[in-house]
Length: 138
Image (cartoon, rainbow, N blue to C red; front, side):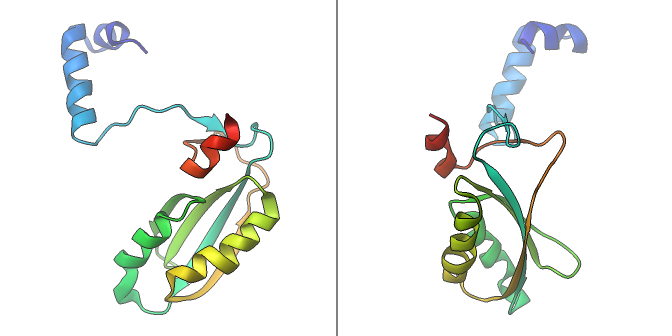
């Protein structure tokens, strides 16, 4: 939506809209990005991984390390049987999920167990591609 259209709907001026957008961008609150539907993009696989840690006192450190792994789209600390839930976006299907679970994730250390779930279908699933996938789209 253009700044003019936003201004009209909010009944403010376009320069006000632009300055507010710039302030949100500068504060790191807003990010403008192109999103894709992972289930319409050929050869992309999405999986959810539930992770249990050995020690909860390392939760902040572990979520930071896990979220920095190449395949990770997002990671969240959650309640319930897992400590962290991770969504991974893969370009090589099951073989890449296997490498993620047996090579990348164990390098983080401090993980008691994990359980993975392949996403077979999702509605309204728009994602910003992780860096390792961007070259796949080009």
